Image (cartoon, rainbow, N blue to C red; front, top):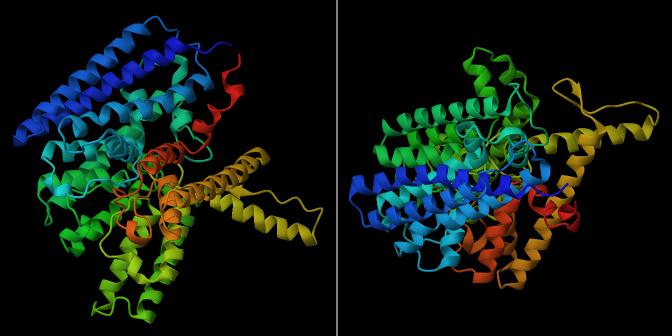
Length: 487
């Protein structure tokens, strides 16, 4: 069947129009604070709105009910690229980033919730730009398409394919009969959590603006901050605890909070992936605490509670793919680098705002591995992999194993590419993993996640790697295959 190009064009136009609304909100913030970003943000809003309207009109006669998986994958992939192109305009037109490469990189890092940056002095940016920067992460956390499906009921039969092409995890569970209903409820939960985190940060040392920005970048597991030294600026145990809670919420399945609000806590309690993830955080935090205490890396911290808090914050920040930092964790020694690499690889839960391989896939791989060991002594035994008490089909197990293999191959390949571009051994590895898993911080001199000094070609490569990781590999790679374009 021929590609439904009109559907793709109309959908891209609709999403750009919706995105213009978000950019106008950020423009309103610029005018409220009277910064130098008023004019560039207003111009950017007009350009984005006109482009969206032109695309919508061009595809107006599209048949929304003749859209399948190909249209879904292509639309989602183009959405993230086009939004990053138009979303970079406020940075570039205002002169806050003086070249297209860095402006595109910064915006792509925002929308994919990676959190890596090329801005050396964040505090010099006006309030409207800072808000827009955080807003891109907040949208990208739950997914631009999820917002669009929830707010724009015009996708017809293509809505399901759009949602599946962007949603994370090895299965896309529907807790309502229509995908638009799912999107609306997830968006509502996401907004509610953001409001709650903003309030709890605001009653602490943060002012309202900083609280709102950090609420958006923590619940989205993005990691952009309004301060150059990130969360360490406040040196507040209270702030760190609230953000740890927020990062944990963002890296767990949003639909579980929907059920909890309806009084059904059983789903949250019994979800196996969530239990594995929380135990994983506890184990990694415990190992980190022991390593720091034995080697005296936090000898200046006089009380054990501070050591526990610093360790837990960094572990949760990396495992949730948020990337906030309160300490120089590279100075914690190379063993913690190994812990950081593991945390960058296995991150969060499916259906969350976090990136990475996801705990659900790791859980299936581990369970299947133990079953294979058992079959060595009991070759005729039937040993299904069970998740939440239900047997997982062999097809899903196969897809999970293929995903993990391709994921690791891309990281190794990207590691080699970045080594060739001039990065050191640890910097190239850390950058490949942080981009693929949408984490933010790296290793070596790039530990802070500031990639300003890497070569221009590497920035474009890393930007594309971010979207490959955010859309969980196959959505992007499939459209590069010749068979995708055949009828």
